[in-house]
Image (cartoon, rainbow, N blue to C red; front, side, top):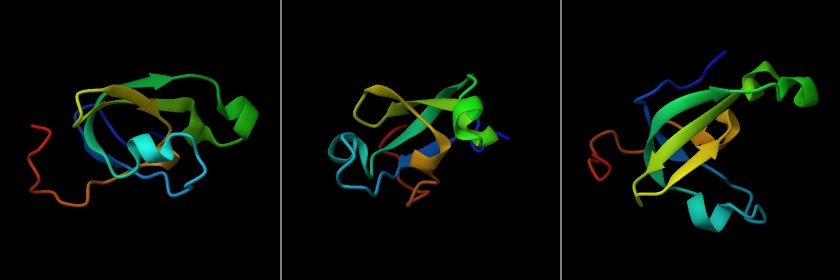
Length: 82
């Protein structure tokens, strides 16, 4: 089951302030540029973990995230990543 698709606009949501990626990525918006697959479900038991979303962030950086770290954007009219 894939939560997002290529081209979808997303917001990174890492609420755990102790997560090493929280400070760098939490609240940043971007677009999914590709969806990669792997076999993480074998470790986690959750089929959603088989998808890794490569996101082009508004900062110009590209990073990979699992479904649990992504949400729909807060402001649909924000064109800062266009």
